[in-house]
Amino acid sequence: MKKNDLKHQIHEAILACQEKQAEELTVLELEKGSGAFTDYFVMCNGTNPRQIQAIADAVDERLEKLGLRTAHTEGYKQAEWVLLDYVDFVVHIFSEKARQFYDLERLWKSAQHIEPSDLLRKAKKTKTSRTKRGEVGKNQQKLQA
Image (cartoon, rainbow, N blue to C red; front, top):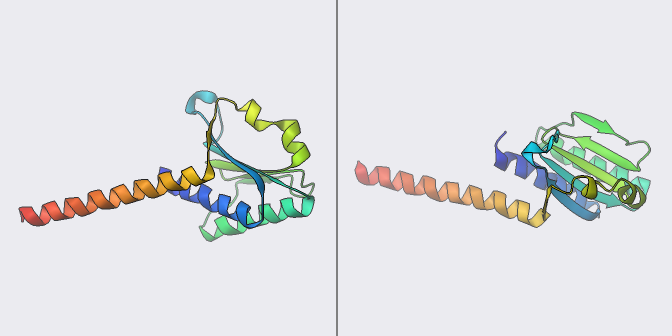
């Protein structure tokens, strides 16, 4: 999968979380040599089981519109820690208590913390620079012809 496609999918998951008022939204980019089974973690909190399930539903629905389905879902009924596995990234939706207890940020402390807004900017910047290079290339071809 192209890096920009992946970042776009992660951005869509983030937007779904934000639409349901998820708290403490964090993105971790996991190191290639760390033995991680995925490239990114998207993590957030919900304030109660109903909100946690609503966040999970919103992420699932939004990504399904892009043609992306979860490879695995865990913890939905209990709604203490819902895990949505999209292979290249995993969305973790916690209760505040579960997030403090499991403390994935500490367990994956070598991962790079990425601000959700930065993730979108990087994806847009790369798309823009490709477009500009493409236009320059077309103009050069016209001049040569």
